[in-house]
Every structure is written in structure tokens, then in C-alpha cells.
Image 1 (cartoon, rainbow, N blue to C red):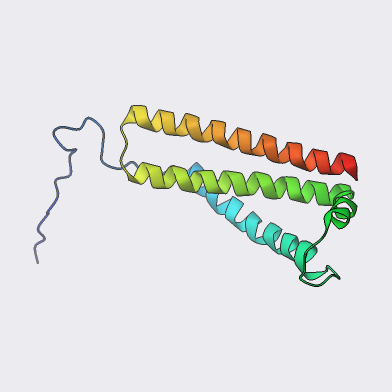
Image 2 (cartoon, rainbow, N blue to C red):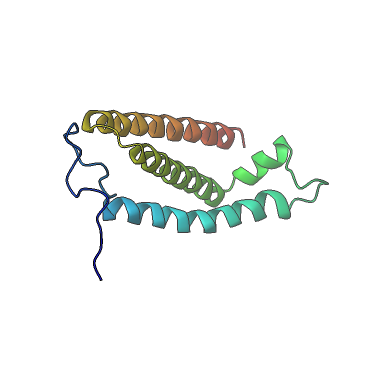
Length: 136
């Protein structure tokens, strides 16, 4: 049986870069590990924030949040939750943008932009966690 190739194996004549470079194993591992960590952390978050609250509706009011976050273990869990959500989400966005086959220069801008966005998100989130913890 013979096969017919419909696409050439080389790059397009007008393009200087390959049409799709595979994600590195390191990026895939980070995405997978943060995904597994998110399953654990989102379970803890949902139980602690919504299922053990005694008020109707399963939501904490401001005073209950301050009391809850006054525990150092909870601050640590929430900080890791923020970190893993941000890393996992931005690696996903990076993968989608790379699927659009940008040029090498655009890939560098995508990477830089996502790093800046990630650092800003984590800094703002840690600022909010710190603010709540200082008021507890």
C-alpha cells in the first residue's frame, strides 16, 4: 500500500520559520504539574470557602474572610493557588497564540508580554492577600 503526501515536509517557500514548533517537554511538564496542583488546590478552596460556611448561600462575609485568612497555612495555600492558576493559564494562552504560527520575533514579544502580565498578576494578587492578612 502506498501513501500520498499532501503537504510538503519543508517550510513554506515564503516563510523562514517552520509552520509549528512543538512545545518543549519542560513547558508541557510545568503545565501538567500545575494542572494537577490546581485540582488539589481548587478542591481545598471550594471546601474551605463555600462548603464549610455556616451562612446561607455558602459565601463568607468580609469579617469571616479576615478570620479565615488570619491562619498562615491558609495564606500559603491561597498564594500557591494564585501562582499555579497564573502559570497554568498563561502557558495555555501561550500555546493558543503559538498555534497561530507567529514569526520568531512575534514569539519573543508573546513570551515577554506574558511574563510581564504574569508578574503583574501575581504581584497584584499577593498585594491583595497581604492587605487582607494585615487587616486580620
